[in-house]
Amino acid sequence: MNFIKKIFKSSNVEFSGINNEENGFAIDGLSKAVIEALRDGIIVYDRDSKILVFNKAAEKIFNLNSEEIIGRSFSPNDIKESKLKILIQTLFPSLAPAIVKHSESNVYPQIVDISFEEPKIEIRVATNRIGDSKGGIFGFVKIINDRTRELNILKIKNEFISTAAHQLRTPLTAINWALESLVRESLTENQKPIVETGLQASSHLLKIVNDLLDVSKIEEGRYGYNFEKINLINFIEDMIKKAEEIAVPAGIKIYLKKPVEPRPQTNCLWKYFFRQHISGRCRPERRIRL
Image 1 (cartoon, one colour):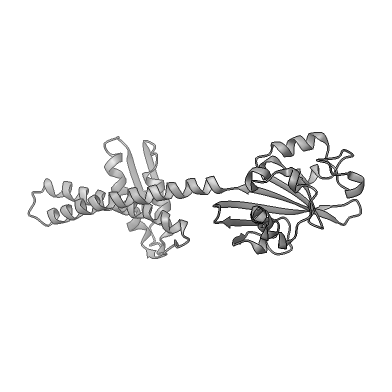
Image 2 (image 1 turned 45 degrees about the horizontal axis):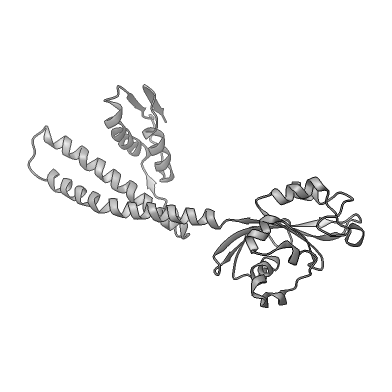
């Protein structure tokens, strides 16, 4: 935004037919070339909503030709013209079907996300003021970032993860149930630890799959932390036991030096930290001191 503001401070060259003496606005040739090359749409308009700049990216986003837009003043009533509907709702966000504000009122730059259904378009719009030589407000600049493709890819990715997790959960649940049944059978001393290890591993894997399903909850804004008090020492010992299944065959030793005095219970947020910390890339010897 600071870069754009610098561009709009200079010079004595006309831009897209806008006369600098009449409008008090001009852009030099280099700045014009930069604006035209930007991937984000740029719209500049004065206090009467007269469009002064409408770059190529804006043409693509709004499916409009700059020649029919530049030099024209717009008002909310122009929303009745179907081809101008999305542009008018962007210029006047209060008319938009769905917006999410990311800034406080009367604080610039104003940043909003706007969603359109027909056609399906998702944009982020940053609006800032342009000052004149007398210290007043000459007009405004809008920077429009088309997020449609980005959000579509994110949605497809989340749907894939959710579908894959659901498909994994069914056979894992069956494996878990079979191991739970097996561990209750009469097993030899050699067989029992093998089955218990398999049950622990399958339960852990099932927990990971359930965590993957939380992706859809995050996307829908339904995900939250569920804090609970745990015994940190017992939890770390459990994590070490799981890590040893991989560490011991690799010749890695993991030590836990317990504190002399008992530690108070802590929130489950530690669970994620220690699970990632212990099950991550291990050095030949790792000591955990509390």
